[in-house]
Image (cartoon, rainbow, N blue to C red):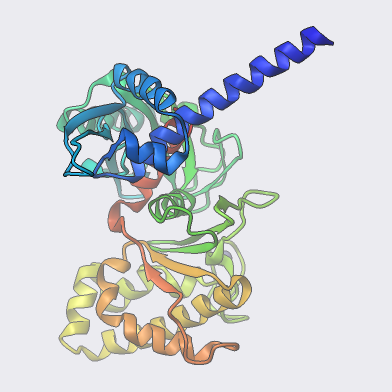
Length: 382
Ligand SMILES: [Zn+2]
């Protein structure tokens, strides 16, 4: 019994030591301006020797830096400590039918480099080789060292199994059954597959530290979503929770690629707008700005449908709704009108749509989110 108690005590003290180290690191990560040891004592309630030991250890590992001199505090000047944001990095890929975006993200979640390659999606060795080259290019352009790369997150427009190994529903690119192994043939780092909207949602959740509950809607060539409840992403029993693209907006309406009719996908995908003008999304918004009749009519219908979808989400979850995807690059001037229309549908707080917010990573949201998976994993386990 005594022996067991001893072992338990040792295990408990190891867990506490690890927690202290992680807490110190996390605190420095949140306080970009840096903190003195005394600040850390006050904020975490730990002893000065514990903090000194952990800071020395973290500095030896290159994870924190001792710098400068703090402003006068009670007549004493003290060195400040800050976390080293470029100590590690992760890469994210955003795979689409016509191009791939690659982004390198540092430990603070900043995009340190990104690049785009126009290439038609194919499931063959030549394509996978190009993915490998793209990863190389972004690492090189960002001036990163291979040994500091935590992993490569691969965002795909399909539903992915819980082990992040296989696409189990890939109607958009007709790639159901594609595996992580195939995508990673020429990528010499740890890899994982992500549903594109889940990755983007993860990124937006991450930069809004501890937001609690949130719904992310991705409005790009396809429509997807991600749901976070009490700071945890909800994937659902079969990994297709929050698939707002297939919420029925208009029963018996337009035919969707999923085989059903009236799905949000058919009314809110960027292609509904580009079809109306026969050009790119930028062309569409230019026409809209010029007051072109067809563009105005298409946008009017689009805004009504978006207000309907957003309000349905809010009625269900009563939480912040983040709009992401390519459309959000152009949506700012139209946000007041969207809020007016969504507010008019609000059952409990008529006129209120303050819960709507816009994503921060914009066109890089999928690549950044896929990379952030590895950043999170690392910073949570320092
Ligand atoms: Zn559908």
